[in-house]
Length: 389
Ligand SMILES: *Cc1c(COP(=O)(O)O)cnc(C)c1O
Image (cartoon, rainbow, N blue to C red):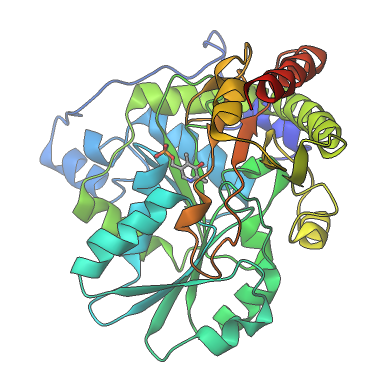
């Protein structure tokens, strides 16, 4: 598909060459596709992931979403999943067998770590965690049985940006697969495959669907990685629902206008927080103090609306008063919608190295509200915290 990214977002996954068709592709709700002859059935069975064959391997709606994502990511292939974590679980199971080792960044999304510590561990696969500041020194952590390096940039909760090309260069030299959770950046602001990553993963639940009303994941990959990921996906029985795939496709249409607004508001609010005495640190990849900021400036073309900050000195009741009284930021997990959210960050999960501070860290998702209203809201929160402390 030609054109700049925002133009392509309006066209990808659509059929553009017919008269009298709806703008949007129809939503196919299907378990069974039927065939009038054995020959037609056999023909379809040769391309089950591209043309209708059986609902569990996809419908024309999920194929359209996958085609759009593969184009945006510069990937040979994309596969849709029923959630972001399902995409991660499929990729984690794709490349390893008993006795293998996985290297995972310590700032990874908590449930990704949990999949390693439960399912992979039971399969006899060991995972070790590395400092997100690790670049080419990853070479020292690689063992003879290391099969996969799992990255997430920026990291969940604390937003360290990794040196992706330094790591993928070494992984390729040693024949080790790499996967990267790129949910924060969306396919617009980071191109993991162009930086040498084999599989790029998105929780499309977040910005891609963009309205907090669907669970959806997607993995985009090289031609070499596809058979491995496909095998794991089939073995695990994952399939994205057509309604959700359609919401993902619909979300892509407006991603190019939503994200710059999230970005501008979040940078403004992050800067405002950094100027407050009540705040000791702001973790936003576009702010120079944040770990890996230089890598962000080199590899990313924008920032989204999710970041966190650390309170300088606040009591437990003060923290509760800050959060509980917020008008525009309610407490909730799944960011990337139009609404602002707040969530405490569990820094005690970190091990490489331990986080080293017990000051509360609060993650904010900056939605599409007017940023002046959000700043007023947070400002009143600091007043409440002072009164309650
Ligand atoms: C939310 C999230 C996921 C998981 O996505 P779900 O659709 O909730 O399963 C994975 N990675 C990151 C970075 C996330 O924020």
